[in-house]
Length: 332
Image 1 (tube, rainbow, N blue to C red):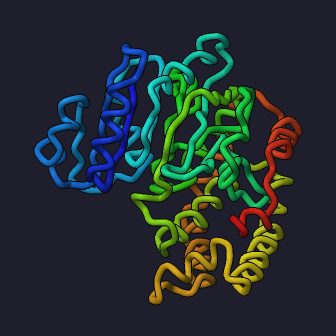
Image 2 (cartoon, helix red, strand yellow; image 1 turned 60 degrees about the vertical axis):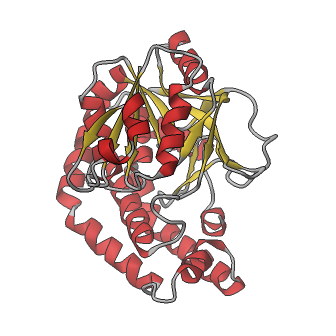
């Protein structure tokens, strides 16, 4: 197994992350840190170099690009991904690996991710809205929730395990996304091929939420909005895609409602910086940027449909089962 840790901050949280992986109860794995900071990580953080092989990038290759570099540098049958601001408990790898070893059709596994130094969950897998917005299942809920193993839609890229055979079949992370939503895109492409995703609640990770990219920033707002459009063009059925503009407007409406109440993501964004660009302007930029990529996205859409094992009705039922409402997306 290979554990790939992309880093941009390259700070003390990375030391703690790497040490937590090095202390796993299972031992047959390697650690690969892909450095997007351009700081010269091997010299900057000797504790990391002691436990991990380091791939240095002269500039930020993005989350997906960094993880793909790590994957291409290995030949192991299983690939774990971990954020540099996360700390894995000792049985994290063993608990995620168990369901994949039991059943070949399971190509992905999600752990139980807790918000570090709190009594609440960060993620127990991912949910998806009809406009393509994806959110963590259980985010902000109490730790006694989601304690049973089972099937889920897909894992968050914060902490996940992937089968190499699945990645060889569906492809790696889409590097056009650069940041955010590439994990959902990969998971949906896998679902079109009928690969399954397990949830392993005994695989526990503590996460400092948005430590690297910031909790609410103009860059995050732009990439999240643009990349959900990338995602729906590539992966949604024709019927789902036709409804995306309507449900986007529904979500925008609820953002305005919660902004007026001083709650939700829109309010967090405006509290984060007095110089933050007007959110409708950020959304407009995102839509125009997505349209510029439309030819290549449509090319990928055709390729995904051509190789799909699921039919559109199956895919629609799957996403309906793991749906989150646009109002919930705006409120979280």
